[in-house]
Image (tube, rainbow, N blue to C red; front, top):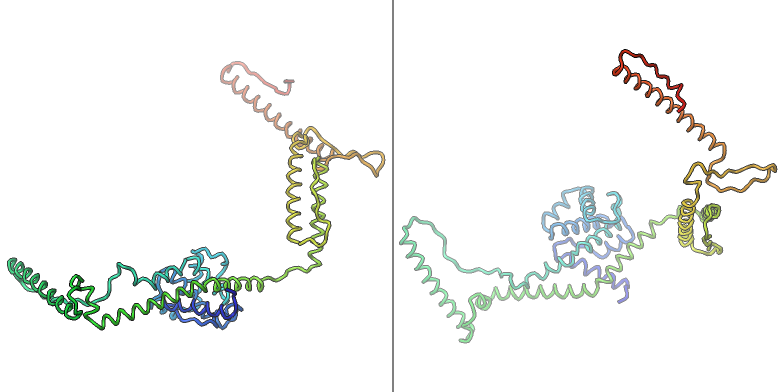
Length: 401
């Protein structure tokens, strides 16, 4: 069925009727229409809808406590309650409570909770619950008046027997009345509970009214089943409306062109670096046409960058200059100032390597002197404990090895 404005209005009316049958407040189609276009006039109505849907998802019903709570608490408190509940349920479009301030956001949040918590199945169980075979009808059964007295054990036993006799007598009298009322002796196999609606015309009329109400519920659920798809498509259109309104271009087309050129230059630099490092294959550059969509362009640039980086890492693992500091490749200036011998990028220059080696040599010399002094002190200590009569003077400076 196409989603015409008439069909959408009909589906919203059915949705509001189902909510009303389960204790929700009354909602008009105009409230939903205004919320789609983020009209502030429907903000209070949508806040109540979100509050009641969240309350129903938590407690399974809408009672007087829910209505009284919405009246007594301020809108900010109600919004905070709904916000915390949405956090627990994992609502994806939630950042701050202020983000739920618009009527459209409130409507979308309520629809999400309605779908996520499967509230429609709970509504169906409530509307069709009286057709359960285990549910007992509310009927009035005659009973004896309660009394208390101090009786002996044999008196209680006698009263129990008399009560059973009176119960049997009452049962026979009631069966006789029912048989005479039905004008049929073949109905004697029916129990008193089955014959009570016939015996009491008011109870029979009440049962007929209840069946009529349940029949209306079934018809309403059947109509909703046929129109529910239109309603949820309309909710999707509300979400798309929000996306289109929230999209604000942050850059101009000219700036995008500059960024595109910058990306192409970066990609070319990566490719040149990969070629200089000895990459066996050159990734393709499918950027010849200007009509290419920008998202596709970014995807291809990202893919090519990943390929270049992967191949560059593989080339670095094979290059000895990245493994041993003793194998260097330098840029050697020739007699001609405008020419130099080609070298591999990424390696240090000769001056940098010389400074690095000089620093390492000085460090090792200091460590060597510290070791000599420590060894001399240990030898002096050994001689003092083991040969106290002899004085040994160890000079490690005289040691050549």
